[in-house]
Length: 52
Image (cartoon, rainbow, N blue to C red; front, side, top):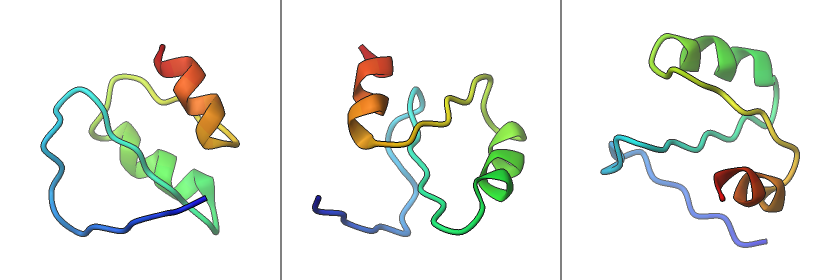
């Protein structure tokens, strides 16, 4: 899997993807402040299935 990293603000207001390699709960806590729904997934493929 190829991963690219950007520290720039995203252009989409409908979708954000966060990767937390250490503790998912810290990412979810911050995301809860900004997003209506959060779908924790294990693989990128699982995220794509949910997005469809």
